[in-house]
Length: 215
Image (cartoon, rainbow, N blue to C red):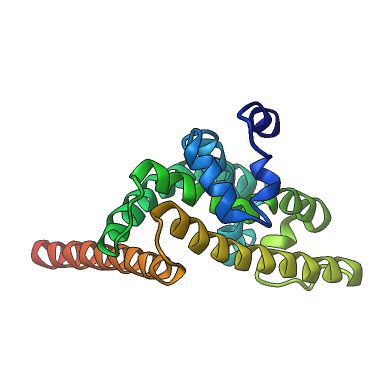
């Protein structure tokens, strides 16, 4: 669907060119309809991120595979959309401190398209679940055999590569969207994360203080 619509808009398929010509592809997206496919990409990114979080938190130690899958699908949709609008706002706001010119809508597009490597890993996740089952999400892997262990190693390696390329795209696409240097784009990301962490700590401290005063 994305491929067909991209051809009708008069430029090359961004699903392909984003991998080897990200800044030029992002500029084409911004010059056409920056909001196109953004919600779909955000949802898919959220699902992939939720599955990764399920592995990190060893959810398989407490829950069955079907529950983990359902939780990741539903939670990923909500988390993906929240992340889209949150980082779209933060990257727009902090980027302007460093001379950026991109709008919040354009930064949402940059954030969504930068997740393409993570989204591309989704078929691998479902393959991994088919091969490893619930063991994919457990803290121990003693129940898997040698071929499964080799598959898990390759799977984790591919996820790491996707993560690194995700970071590279995030910096490049924000730089292109804001029309700033790569260094200022990195600064924009660092400022955004600093604001996010600062707000989270402030909320946690406020809740703790209120709890202390009440109890």
